[in-house]
Image 1 (cartoon, rainbow, N blue to C red):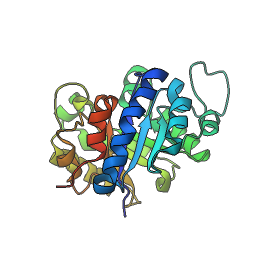
Image 2 (tube, rainbow, N blue to C red; image 1 turned 45 degrees about the vertical axis):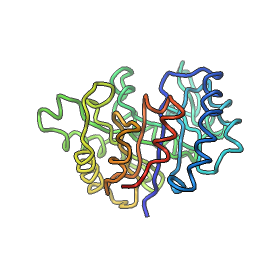
Image 3 (cartoon, one colour; image 1 turned 180 degrees about the vertical axis):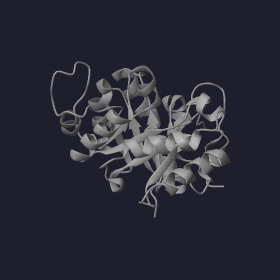
Image 4 (cartoon, rainbow, N blue to C red; image 1 turned 90 degrees about the vertical axis):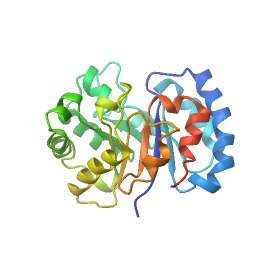
Length: 249
């Protein structure tokens, strides 16, 4: 049975004060509706490093299916890597999930499949579950290279990675914050292709790309999609609560 995982990626948004205000608004909505709509889903808020202790403290008495996650992890346990964060630092806080290889890390900060692979293994070594992001650019899609590009990301990124402790998020880069939309059926098709390349058929595969409260029900109705990785829409407590409490069609 594949696990449903709904994750919010706050990117470089929210101070500690703003993060606290979010949870104050969000948690009552989660508690009120989870029993009817979203009880089986694992909910993860991947927040900036500075907000993690605050969120972990506030979430201590939240429903057990809510976890706080990080947005990146380095492959070394320590060292001269200014601006990076090590797995032991995250584990000490109580972090169990971490995003690895997000398209913005690849685009702006030189992330490669090789460094993604190292980060994945570091997270797993310390007991965290990484969320691996893969996806094609508009240029790759226009050239008909969607499947081959993603296959390459998987082949290079997953070497010696434990598939039983992994989540994959398919994020078509061309549909993130651009106004372009990847139709739910197309997202389902690509995720099916991803699943066909993996040995673990129970691995959770999310969709990420302009996920909003008005399209979540259609997305979650697709048979290959096991959850979503939400960007901008996860910043609003009411909107994210509606996503978390999606209604199965």
